[in-house]
Length: 227
Image (cartoon, rainbow, N blue to C red; front, side):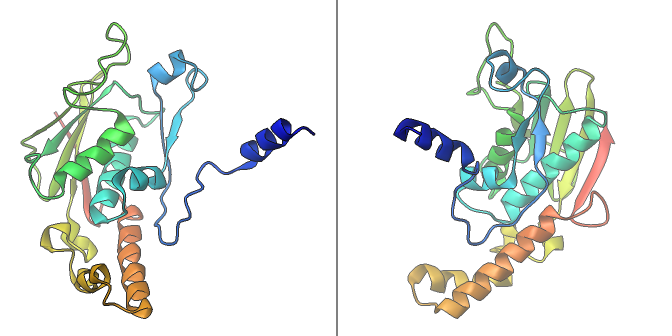
């Protein structure tokens, strides 16, 4: 086997994610079709892209309750809007309840954009409109408590509102993160010992995992169909 062939074989045998994770929660991946990716040959026709929680955590640079809440909110919304098939990018419009300057909302919107492709005016306009996703994500009023997001399937006008109550998870990103955050300043300053840092990370990611495992009802999430 030539050096080139050996390198190619080694490359093909690698996992798709070589990030050396030490602490990361896990979740069911989200499968979503992207017609533009199909046209350009990234994936076979009508086959989905696979977006994992690891993907959005890497894009965000961290895994936290807000990132997990946005991931799970999107997952629950897409399951409701597309019960019989894969969700489709460019067919999903999202309203993020609140203002883009609100604490935590910007990062949550970025997670939703990463999964659904829905973007503001800076998004890709498509080829002659095909595959466009600009002007599909906005901030505004959503009639629900907590962190609220309205997802609309534009081809059918079906819509759902997902609300996420961070305080129900025991760590509220709007309240300095709760008790688990008390050690963080010491870790950042380099004053915490290894045992303190490990205990903090274990508590932190256990709470993130709880969000990702939460059901559609009876926990921090509420999913309601809307007109």
